[in-house]
Length: 199
Image (cartoon, rainbow, N blue to C red):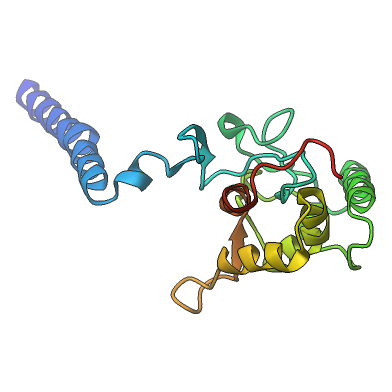
């Protein structure tokens, strides 16, 4: 019995060492060497070299000169990377319906003259609450407001949007998408930071 226990203990310790320590260290080391940006969180810097976020995580933008991502249910105020979650509200939930109606009213007030209907993703949170992407249609819906707040033509903003629209992965997986943070940083580089109040 004692010899069986010793064998089991040695096997457990060896397995723990190999799969719990050496393998994760090897994979992390390879990731740092082969994909240093991604291994360190895909962090983004602005034109002044200051950290502004990660291209993998959405963040809220309140100024009218920025494209806004989907609403977020992550954390109490939304966009909390330590509390990634969905709202878990079902289609019959009055709270979900009222929240979407409130968000819809805010978006319509902030985007006068925007085309109808409004893309549904702009009033519903993603499963993680931190999805950094919008569809090109949801970004286009906001384009008039962004161009007006920045004091530039819609065509110039549309050109930046077109450059930052990603196609389907491998040409057939998923849908075309726009990373909101990358798009807003590109607008800042090209046109400067927007004023806090729309002109």
